[in-house]
Image (cartoon, rainbow, N blue to C red; front, top):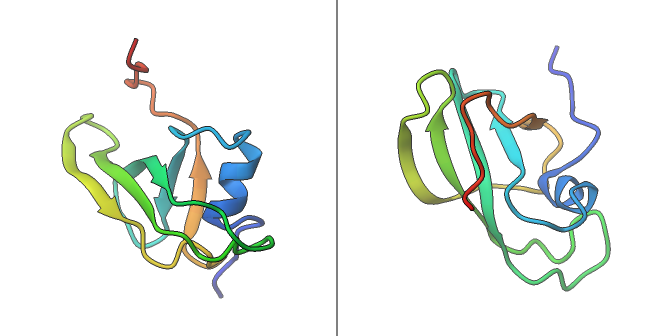
Amino acid sequence: MATFSEQNVYQMFDAADRKLGFWITRTTWLGKVARVIHIGELKGPPPYYGNPKVKADLYDSSTSHLISQGIEISVPGTYKTWRSVAPPAWWRAPE
């Protein structure tokens, strides 16, 4: 039985004080994490905010290898597949 997240990606953005750079993973990804780099304008009410586009950079969680930049996060409003995660130990925020 699948467990569901308490927040969708938009709510994770709210929980991060609407600051980009928070980290997510997908339940179907093995060894990958993504850093959210863009969320379109929030135009509607929570929890879906009008379903703006979300983009992220995808990394290998163990090696820090950048797999893909600016990927579109599919169905960011779902509670089924997306999970908030702590920044990887190797991550250093750009100065």
